[in-house]
Structures are given as C-alpha cells and as structure tokens.
Image 1 (cartoon, rainbow, N blue to C red):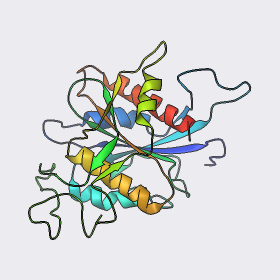
Image 2: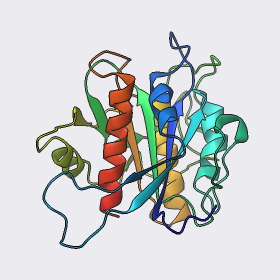
Image 3: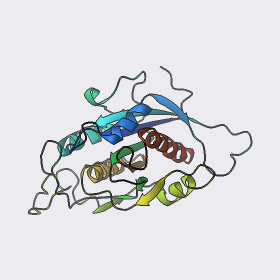
Length: 246
C-alpha cells in the first residue's frame, strides 16, 4: 500500500503480562491504536492560515515484560527498515517504513493517577525479576551491579539518557485549553522493564544517529483515574502533539 499521503510513521509499544496483570493495561490501550491514522493537531493556538494537518500512521507492538526480549528486540525497531517480530505484531496492511519510524513511543503501567511523560531513563540499579522470573543482566566487571554495560551499552552511554522531546512543553500544551489531558511530567521511570526499555530505546536511537525521538508514557491501572479508552486517547493526543513539531 502506498503511503504518499502519510507524513509520519509512528511505532507505539505496550507490554505483555506480568505480576497480577494477565493482560497489561498498557497493551489494552495501545492495541486499539494499531494500523490507525490520526492527524497532527496543536492543542494551543490557531494553525497558520491555509495549513493542513499531517497524517500519522500508527503501528502497535506488544513486547513481553522480559529483559532478554527487550535487548534482542529493540535494535531492530530502530533499524532501516525496522524489524518487527511477527509474533508480537498484530496483522497490518502496511510494511514498516524503509527509512525507519519517525517517532517511537513506549507505554507501560505504573500506579494510580494521571498519565506520566518520562524525561529520562537509567543505565543501572535494576533489581526486580521479570515475567519469566529472570533477573536483569549483570554488568561485566561491576560485581553485583545490574543494568546496561558491555557488551550492550558500555561507556559510550551516560548513566542517565534524556529524551530529545521537550516533555515540559508537551505537558504544558496538553494540560492547557478547554479539554486538558490528565498528564504530568516525571523523572522516575521505575528501574523495572519500563525504565529498561526506555534506556535501551534511547541508546539505540543515539546509535542509529538519525535523531529519532523516543518517549515513554506511564499509564495507570484500568479505572484508577483513567479508563483504557482514555489512556488510548491520551496517547493519540501525545503523538499528535509531538509529530506537529517534527
């Protein structure tokens, strides 16, 4: 299928089961966005006269809540063309874009409350076992320290990686106006799989050197302030806002 009318191709990921979640709330929201087309739409101010919104195609991916799967999957998501594991990707009418995705958004569940747009991710300090009860990887030469290091992401990457997206401006846009979104900024992605996938994705974006922006969004458990539909709509609005500035 030709994509000449679609300006932006965006990948959105959610997580698989873990803990008490047989279906992860993040995936319940994200999967409703798969193979849909939305438009850029600034939330504040009027667009320039005569301007038209750009089309955005969304591809959804369900990633197991497993450290080793994140490590093996994320490099392919940032490749040209991207490599999406078939067993984690719902059927779609569009192949991944040859030039790579222009934005990658990861979504995961946290505690009750609003959506949280995360500014940064951590390299080390991971302790909790994953869905398969496997511990995070030990860093070679660092004793019991777990997280990222050689051979995956060694000294070339900092202890904290920050998204290139202006998260403060994003949240300010989305919480202003007549229909404010329930969202806040955060510097605490949690040092579990959410933090882990964010750091991995930010590092792969830097390694690919194409300037692909990456963002992580935490959502609450179902009904603990937001419904699944409200989370999905929030993610749509976030993507629309970010793509309007690309």
